Image (cartoon, rainbow, N blue to C red; front, side, top):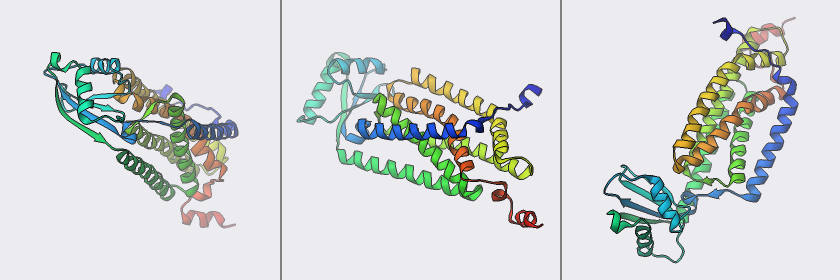
Length: 309
């Protein structure tokens, strides 16, 4: 029990300028990468064709994907739809092809007559649906940032809220940069991963902020940098355990979850790694750079007492 009660003594703040500079350069590089290379937008944003087929018995999705790939549909997204016998296939926009032609090609690629496969429905999703989804996704991110900033400003102090939002933007931009670099398909599940990452990263930041506030109020002696170092070290073991267990689940999801959640797991794995250092070298570091002090967190009565000669 004594081993777990020991607090490490790592001087994180000694590298605060290097960490903040590196994070700034990486963020700018990720933004430039997204602007130049762009994102590999999926069918959810570009529009396409939805085809639902019914199998007489349970079918493996990998075999469906391989059949479609052999027929030239390498970008097809395949997933179960309610049951292991119902399969939903999402295809890129079909140029100069009617619904009859698309359905015929799909059924032929899957050997429908031989395997007893029936077509249940086919729908064309226009790009305007993808534009609406992109707009609502952007608004969701904006409202999430605003809500988090207001919450932290009321619970802690505005300098902390600026640091927290900077860390969240940093994490989201870094993930987008990786997705652009690897050209991972950006679909609705990837957007969900970024929203989930915002909550995950903010939780890590709040834990450190809460300990910083507690130590600044209770320990009237000591430099702010020393208090921040102590607070980060006190939460270090908890952070390591949380990040490792989360990464274990995400790695298992990446290898065993199939292609339908591939982009989600990639975004989350990289996001968790980025959030590990951004909670220290971006959010907390920026709050220190803005001049957060013990007086900012003391109740008003305590401030008046401290100001007395």
